[in-house]
Image (cartoon, rainbow, N blue to C red):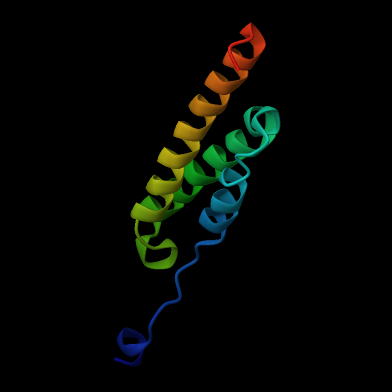
Length: 89
């Protein structure tokens, strides 16, 4: 009975790291090479952990939002770099 009354603290470390990495959007080349791929990897890792142990790692909404944001950012950064490369920016 005592175990059911205790609240389990959720572990969102990978999600917060992925969020911070995905917000470095003002340097597109570093985004594409380092920050956004790492944010995507950490988001996927958090999703896998949350599926295995939802009581410990919490809901899937946070890593899913970060994954969507990181994916959109890598596409936008690639597009901006392409436009810059061909001289339209």
